[in-house]
Structures are given as C-alpha cells and as structure tokens.
Length: 639
Image (cartoon, rainbow, N blue to C red; front, side, top):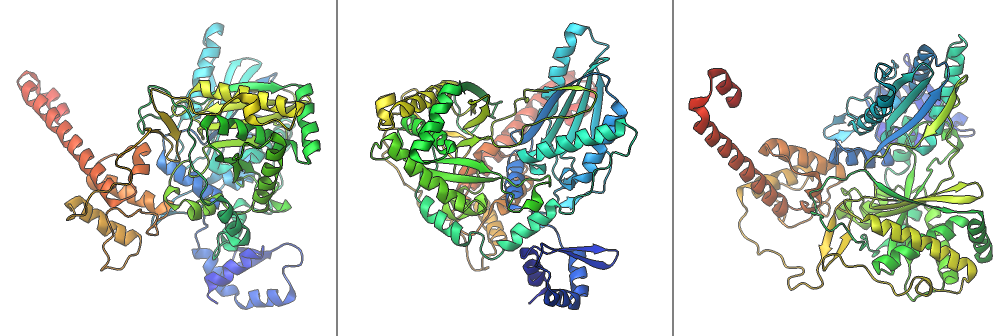
C-alpha cells in the first residue's frame, strides 16, 4: 500500500496525525489505536512524517461548493454571513480587541486561506495574528446623521468582497455612536463557518471579553480537533466511493426529478445579464393557536412538525408552478461526530427532498408521502450534496443552484446571544446580502408559534410570488389542520402558473431565469457539423489537456464538458485560461450556456469582436480630437 493510500486509510478510521518537531503525534477515538495499529504506524513513521510535510489539505465537500461559487462571482456577497449587534454601556475597546484576537487564534477556520496548486484549491492555516478590526468614530457627526452614517458603513462592509486566496475570511468593524453606544459588525465568508459556528464564535467572544475586562488572559482552551481534520476525514472516507450505498439509493430515488421551477419572473427581466440585488422578504407569523394545529396534525399523521411545514410549502410551490414533481433543498447540520460540535467550520449539508404531488392527494396522504421521503433523505444525510449532483446532473455541477432552487429550513440552532459582561447587547436584524436561492423559506419557533420568512431573489422571482406563496402556506396549514382529507386544490383552487407577458418563466439551475414559449418548431435542433474554426481548435486542445483525453482524440464541439469528465474546478481553470488568452471578460451568468466548445468559441469570438470594435471607436475618437489636445492630455489618452 502506498503511503498516500495508507495515510488516507488511517484518516478514514478517525486517526489524526501531526508532526510535532519531528515526532509523530497520533490521536483517535477510543478503541481505534490498537497495539497492532500503533506498531504498524511506528514502522512507517518516517514515511508518514515525510507525507505530512508535503501534503496539501483538501477542501471539504461543502467548502469546495463555496469555493466554486466564489470563483463564479468573486465580487458577489451571497455567501457573506454578517451579524450586527448594538452595545450599550462602558465598552472597553482594548478588551474587545484582545477578545477578538483570542477567538481568531482559537478557531483555525477563521484564519484559513485557499490558494491553488495546479488549479485545485487546498487549505492553508495562517499563523495566529490580530483579528482584522476596523474602528470608526462617528461622534463628530451631528446626532441625526450618525444612524445614516452607520447604516452606510454596514452596507459597504457586508458587500465588500473577500479574497479567499489571501484572506482574511473574517472582518470586524466597531462603530462608535456616542460615549456609551456602539455597533459591532462581524462579517464572515460562509466558507469559514456555518450557522452553528456563529453561536460558538459569540460564546467564545463573550468569555474572552469578560476575561480581558477583568485583567485575565483572554485565552480559550485550544481545540483538540480542527476543521482540517474533518475535511481530510470526509475526503478519505469517500475517496474511492463518494456516494456509498446510501448515496446510490438516493441517486436512484432522485433521478429524473425536474431541476427547475416555473415561477413568475419580473417583467423587465433580461435573462443572464442582471446581477442579483439584495433579497426581498415576506414575513408571516403562525401564532400559538395555528402552531398548535400544526403539532396536532403532526401527531395525527405520526410525522414531525418539520414534515407538516415542509409539506405545506411544497404543496403551495407545486400549485403555483403547476408542477406535480419538485425538488426542495433542506440544510442539515452535517457534524457527524460529537467531537466536531465545538469546532468552527462549514459542516452543513443540503438534502434534496423530492415531493411528488401527482394524483391530487389529500393532505393526509401527502404528509405520509413526504414523511417517507424525508426519512429516506435523512438516512443519507452524510452523503455530500456535491457528490449527488455529480451523479444526477453532471452538466449542472458548475451552477449556483444545481438541483434545488427552492429551500426550506426549520431553525433548530441554539439561540444567538452575545454575552459581553457589563454591556447591554441587542442583536440587530442581519444586513441583507444577495440571495443564495430563487426562493427560500425559514421557519423559526417563537413564543409558542412560528415566525416564517419567505425570501426571494427579485432578479429571478417576483415579490408578488413570495407573497402568494406565504399566503398559500398559511391557508394550506389552516385547511389541513381543520380537515386533513382536503386536497390542495380544495383549499387553493385550480393550479397553474401565472403568465408573464405571454410566457412562463422557469427558474433553472443556471442562476438565471429563462423563458419557456408555448411551443417550438426547432426543439433539439443542432448545427450541422463542419470544419473547426481557429477558436474551436484552440479550445479543443485545452479541452484535451484538462480532461486528460488521448492525443489522437478530438472532442466533439457539441459535447458537454461535464459529460467528458470535467468537474467544477477544471471548469474554473478553463474559464481563467480563456479570459487570459483572449483578453476578454465573460459575464458570470453566461457560464451555464458555455459548456461545449461550439458555444464557448462563439461567445469568445463575439467578445473579441466587441472589444476590438470598442478599441477602434476609441482610437477614431482620439484621432478626431488629437489636434485639440495638449501633449499631457494626449499621453493620458494613449495610456
């Protein structure tokens, strides 16, 4: 067995290896490091130490999805995770700075960067240093202007891009409003931590601030387990079979499911060209009475309240889209072992849940149908979402939403608190960032009821749709609680998509909306084969190199990049090469249409033509103006 295979086998068993000044340190769950295994490891110690010195720590599956999304849109803010709090009282800024530094030191994911080697990303944990903190004093402004200035500060900061190659992936801003009132904004990139991680960060920040305020060293205990351990373990476990038995079962269950939703889009939509604005939200509240009806319905059907809420959401979506088969994504914690519960990092996984609405079932029947599907999905909760996508929809692995454009989650995370001793701390509404999904619903238990937020991407789905879904959601739950034998049509009336300017808009996995005419005379038509253009030939050579095709094989110009063995990371390499080699910039939202040589070559030729025409126009204008320009102005224009 090669040392690479042997190391991966140890990691898959849960063994953690580290080089401590030339000594091999081993740690593992109880019962794993038997005497026989320790003897085996000792015999290969020198090989293992050499491998540790040379290895590059891979990204976990969730991290890889986020890295690809960032490469798609490096200036976007959809995966920025801000938390904003107001602090009232006698804040000690020095103690706060020391507390932030202590948290930054303890959690390696906060100071990890993601450079590439031969086009593939890996993790590098930077040495401990000060947490990036910006302090701004707004007290010189008139009192009435401070709130607006603070709002502008926050808005700029949460939208400021991250550089995952160099970091940082966490930024802090402290705004002083007056002598006893402050705003603290923490902004992380999602690659540095999930929702559970936020609670850990704020808990440790409170403990460290209390220690620093009291004059004690704000040093939290070190973590025995690191996020890089999880990433290596996850990759090692799934090294040869990313899906496993349960994943293969899920692939069979999900294969053939539609990966788009026919949702109404804005009338002024220009497909593939608009950048996503901040999300628009519609909030509803289920008071204690209706919430009790949800729980009673769950007891009656012997399902969970989550299943009841998800069923209502799916039923309304299917009704709105006139679809009897839909996929909804639901996030799960993804921390497979208790030892990871105190580790900051991105563990969350997305479960695609297939809901079939065919046959006009009663809500009682639909609840049981959805319950079975949810249980099946949970059985495979550890199967990486990216591995499912690679098998079910390989041509969509590079899309921002490869399978699920709608999501639903029931919040079960610990309440977010910021315990800073000596201060009154108020958690303010999170600043809005770009939406991750076309449509998302989040239900949060609150005072015996549920607060439910429906969030839409207004570039792809109308705000009216969100209001219609929210209204239908409440009506379906009320109707089902009164009589589970009713169907969705009984409650909401006949199903059907609402037209927009004579067509229906399907939100597909490309991250943009596309129109669907009522008929087509040329569906499936392809251009006749012919000699390759010069651009196509250059792309075919790169295609062959990236995909390791035999030298005597010339890729079909209409073959899909993923069908030939490409993956998301290889496609980022391809696009970077294209933009550098041809001196052009391809819009991010066009990438989904450029997965074959013919399409990509056509886009390149168009972009080069537009670039050259613009340069010619600029030169012509310069020639016309040259006689009127000073020598200094002429130099500037020429540059």
